[in-house]
Amino acid sequence: MDVELTVLNLSSARFECTFGRGCEGICCRNGRPMMYPEETARLDGHLPEVLETLRPAAKALVSSQGYLSRRRKAGLPLVRVAEGWCVFFHQGCVLHQRGLKPAACALFPLSKDEHDNWYVRQKGYKGEIWDLPCLDPDSSTLPAGQSLVREIALAATFS
Image (cartoon, rainbow, N blue to C red):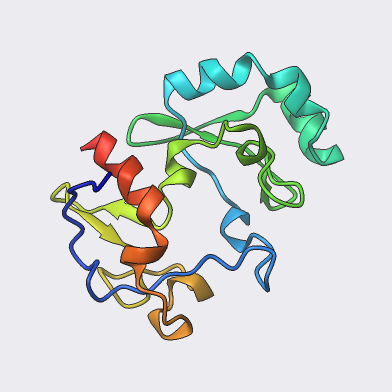
């Protein structure tokens, strides 16, 4: 099924996730995704099993203080960080492995600008400051329109 969604720079953007092929999850380094109430409710139902898969420091933090911090973005709570990593990162995203990945992470590298327009985060585009190799259009020849089909389909459900 083709999804119609306008993405401002889709025709020029390049993106290829290389997790496990040179990238070890740097986007989760200090990653603090926001979580919608439905996501926290779903995760809460799976938290005991998720806890068992966390890094020791993350498990201790989540067990004592919960996985959401007091910090907020767009009115939504942000996930905590332990030892510089998202608490749910342990050799990959433990939430992704269980189908519980927050929308903010599942949409990456798509984002909305101040005018509510979707765009692909790219080095040098709209003042992007995150210096990740995957956001550098010179590091990949793969058009974002090909690599981000699932993310674009998900974004269309938010539009």
